[in-house]
Image (cartoon, one colour):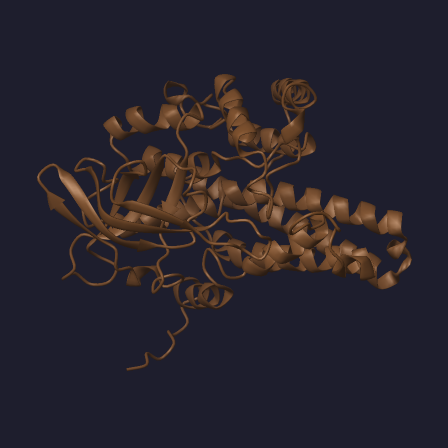
Length: 395
């Protein structure tokens, strides 16, 4: 990629930096730097107000067409805004699943009516989304899903269970993969449904994590309903749409992750300098090696975004989740190593009081599991990218 900036791009950077500084050092100072990994529950209502503020001033969904709330901005300007957002220590986004996953999916696969109905409300921050993919017996093997939907007049009726559903307890809508033809082969007969979360027939149970928070949830559908027109793409053609959503997750969202991971690295490096552990050659080497891995993650995300802009996926896109999951796990371990013996002791306050380093360490234990475990990721890359023979099937 050519990452040189034109005078117009630099003017855009100046405007973004000025706006973020004004808001995050002013009325939204309380949310600055909050809501990252392991901290998702912090100041939720304040961060939702921040999402609405971003939407009012059109700082969300920058590359979307203006008619849907975007700016028709270039990929490079999206990168610039991500950089400035990280520099300003912007809070964890509560609207990220809408902007980064379902929004681009509807743009590329949805109908005109769906684009008009859903995209402006995502861009404005008015409606929040969650993802209904994984199930107890269909996590990394997504094609084994058992949630079913049957057409009843002008509505789909949904029965089943989803798990590890991030932010479900706050979401207004969920995009759900459901089997609509149970006689079809595994990767067929699946539809991609848009389901309102506020109606009857939906039960949400939070899952308590090692950090003591509950970002993830179980979601039970027992006769939940959605309109017949709330299918993205073709009925029984949801697998193709679902894979498109995952491609968006491996692109723009990975770049945003890289910037937040870099902030975590900078905090760890500052702690190493303050505590004196930077004098240890092994610690210095690990800090340098982790920084290099962060740059690899960044440039791989940029290459993936460039390919997505051309309507392509690449081998580099395929390895991104496997790469960043291990990197982030190692970053959590490095945070505790730098903290030393104090890293094994709680903060001493009421309840489950964790330091930032401890919270990062505990949260990143899950990185190599959710979103497709490392083992499944390697199988997918081996079989579908490298063309290796599949593993023998156990009968």
